[in-house]
Length: 478
Image (cartoon, rainbow, N blue to C red; front, side, top):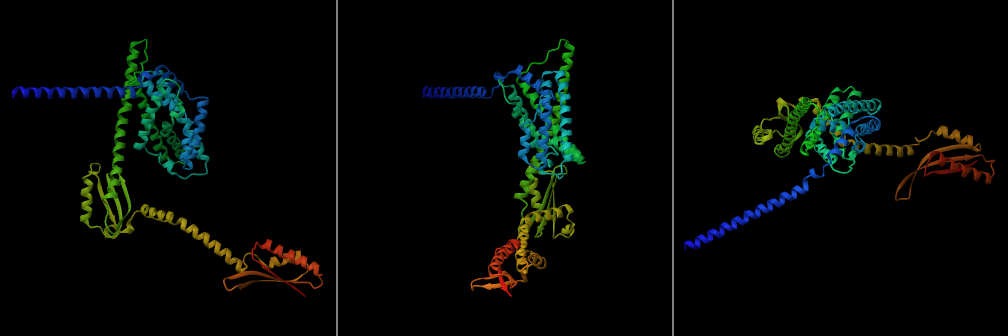
């Protein structure tokens, strides 16, 4: 019995060892597969990448003109709120060169390249802003479009585009062979061109808040693009620039490391803040749509403010009991992102929060919403009224001056002795119609053949003159 148990235990242990061996084998295979799939070090051309980065830093000649034209195109797109035009401008924009140069220079401790990158970056920003300012100054369209307004403050989406766009660009640049760097720069241009154009809009129209906000957005995006380049260059093991003077080499390395830390720490902090703000807005929208509901009451307007941690709603309709509001607050506090938030409820029938005391902004928003909803209906009614008035004018004879028409007829037809006009109402017992009718009295001395010819000419003339499809002419001879 003991020998049987030992044998079973031995077989069990053997099976466990086999399973562990199989698991290790599967793990090794998965590791090898992922390594072959995602490893880019063996296909990295470091020397050619450095040459390409150095080449793209300079902003003169062709690059300067290409930048000017692409900024004009992007400004037009923003001015008319056309996303397609803005994307078209990105396809020809050379914006990314100096920014990638900054990230690469810090990664390899190349002070000369870093200095040249910063100088050309300043030229690039100045040229772009001047071009956009000139366009928006001479543009007849001065209004703020959604495309412009969206580029006045950084959001988590802008930062993510800058990060992953920068990573895609530098990874593409390091690959052996030639890749169209302009096309690979589209994602980066998404984060750079519109903010610079918006800076120009703000300067041209004296809107300093827009100008500073857009410049801040551009700066943040540029930092993250350079940071992406720095990270990839370090991971791929780009060689550091060697200096003959070891003291200078150490000083350069310390300077590059200091700059990297100065850039990275605020960037990470900003990224976390933007992420928290985005989560706050998302959870607040979810809370409002799923929780804030009461029969007979409707949300007129809702605002969310991450800085003050407040969610403010305006209700209209039936009075919501205080107990229901407390239930909403309790559910809101159960949401991690909204724990510190305060729920402020305004109700139309509440004496302390009378509907007449709502902000002018809210009232304006309501009026604008009503206007937009009914604009199409009003336009259709106006067209219908115009058509009916036109038809009515035909029946009343308001489309022409009878006095002027009769004088003109006498000049053209001297043999007319008298002319009359009336609207003749006729029916065939199925429908009633109103026919404009002219009664023309001709001179008796006119021969019959001449009279027939003149009557036909008069009828054709009067039809063309008044542009009437239905017309009757009665000829009388004295």
